Amino acid sequence: MHTSIYPPSDDTFFLMDVLQKELGDGRGKHALDMGTGSGVIAEFLRNMGYVVVGADINPHAVEYCRKKYPDIDFRVSDLFSNIPERFDLIVFNTPYLPGKAKTLEERGWCSENGEIHRRFFAELPTHIKDGGICYVLLSSHTPYSPPKKLKYEIVARKKLFFEEIYVLKIKF
Image (tube, rainbow, N blue to C red; front, side, top):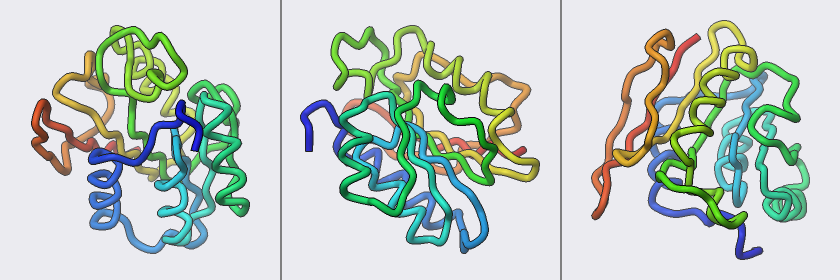
């Protein structure tokens, strides 16, 4: 795996545990794994029956995922820039730590002034179907909160040694 690809970590496995509890059979439904990184969440969703698109700004991540999971559609995309479809489910393990990313690798965990979150939440409604659900992983260090107009709840929290991570469930 290329060094610029965000590897599965505590946040990834926490999000997958939450999805396991929250989601049912995905057969016949379409899911987007935004910021797919290593592709493990895309694979997890595919194994639940979803037809999955994995998107990442990192071309190394997309190349890696295409080779490892050839039956999943992976795309290089700056958030929704290469994603015209609407989905039943969108999952995003966001780059939730504050700071300016200086390398491709750092883009997997840094968001300066919450810019990535602002753009994601602004574009989200046009990419999710009526009745769809979005799960977003954030941190106590995330420099941005979703707009109040979105109907969301925190469905899980986990304390780590230097932060608390939590998962938002947004219904449409």
